[in-house]
Image (cartoon, rainbow, N blue to C red; front, side):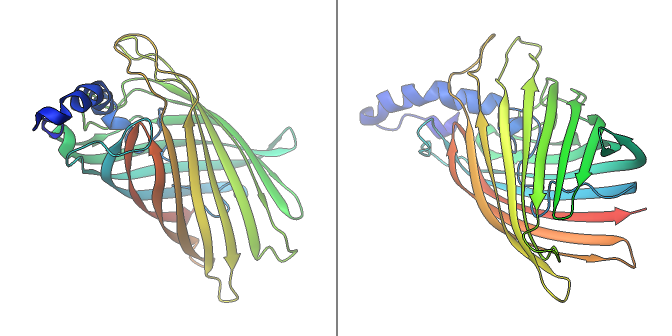
Length: 300
């Protein structure tokens, strides 16, 4: 990689030390938006743990992620210009039935992502359909001033892996979801939500296991009298296990971000729009940057 070219004798040792890490980040390029699994943190924010009532819904998550640098295990930037960008549209289809399971509203979902990535540090660019998610279990509970959710599903390895920038990860993941939303006031104008995603990754074709990951997205929101909702949002992600097998590179990944969100829902149209920007302030063993997200919700 040109970003690690040794330019002086004084930095030869540093370049040799960073070379394996840079190679590992290059191999992990398709997961630039995630930690070690498939799920993209930051796509849910305010009331992210609240399941809607019975019905059919479409949510389109348009995400643009600018990679500003690649970080080592101490959160320090690797030398060179290690930039890139990922633009994706995740198409999520949700159906909540009128059936009850364990006292919760039962539903199911699927996610079909489309992605374009341009990775300058990998000299790679590609566009394609990513790995598809199938979620046969979505459970939503609702109280007077709270909501809760549990969900389970599988990310399939349907996407291409021909290029470092390809949309496919090259392995399957089981994803378990658990979260809740609390409304401090009876009018539910204030809300605090936390949504966790636990991903168990299968080995890829080379026998590499990147380790399980835990992601937590949260949002503190306030709905104004005019219906506009504003809030503070963030996410925190950790790789829980070391990479093992095949040519796995050492080092666990972490991602932490903070940002703002605004949204509005038009009940007469059954249409909602949310926008958020999150800036990553701490990343270890992975790309660091900023994420812009636009979410469209349509009720059918």
